[in-house]
Amino acid sequence: MKPETITLLCTAALAVIPAYAGEIDAAAFVAAHNKWRAKVGVTEKLSYSPALAATAQAWADNLKRTGHCRMRHSKPDGQYGENLYWASALAWSDGRKELQKVSPEQVVDSWGSEEADYDYANNRCLPGKMCGHYTQVVWRTTTAVGCAVAVCEDTQEQVWVCQYRPAGNLVNSKPY
Image 1 (cartoon, rainbow, N blue to C red):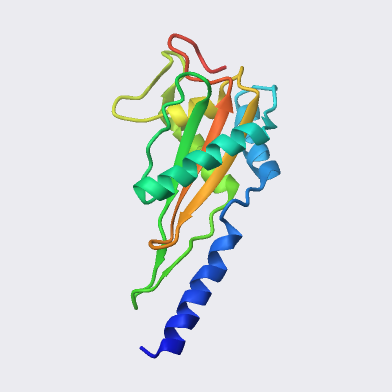
Image 2: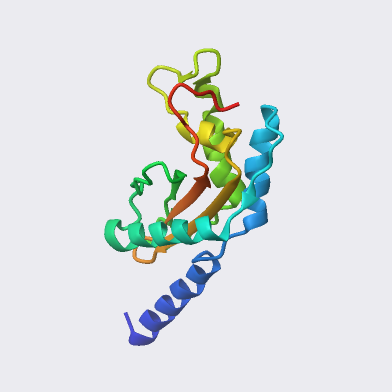
């Protein structure tokens, strides 16, 4: 490759990243959460917490720095709840990778889709299924959410983090 081509490719790749790095549509995240909550009769709406968003961003940045966007919970020790979402790059047949456009609705709806795997009567996930992300989204006593994203530039992968206060998923308690 010519040096000019390399410079152009690097410039083009960097131009895509700032569209997501650190820019969160707080209103869209709150609306997406509140849609799932309303669906099960939880009328207590979430508010957006800049403090939770800051700790979520710190964790997303840590995952980017130490884990190359691999998902791993921050072990919040009951201070707050946490949901994680990962998005791959768009991969082209010529080997190019491009940042995938991901919306707050996609992130929250991925967690909400676990509703199908939750058995409310017995307050548990169906055998072999996960539903804790869903139950955190709809947890009645949770009042605040803050979300963040980090992009691993080398792979164009994304890791999204939402943190919740107070935490949900308390043992022997139903979410709503």
